Length: 47
Image (cartoon, rainbow, N blue to C red; front, side, top):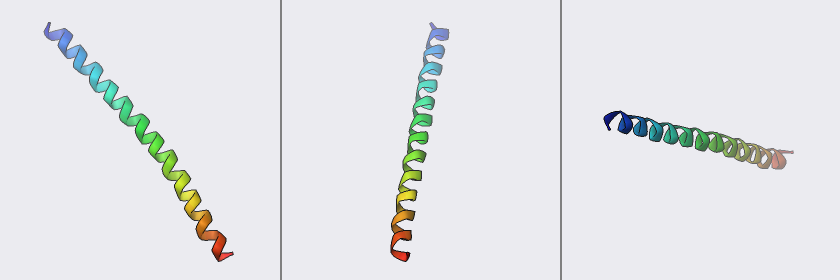
């Protein structure tokens, strides 16, 4: 019973870690796109 509970907790931790990693990667992509858009908006008036 104890070993099974440890395995479940490890599985839950791995799920949360993978979720956090996916969210981080999406956040980086969104952040990069936003920064590109901001750079374009800043560059257009200067031209």
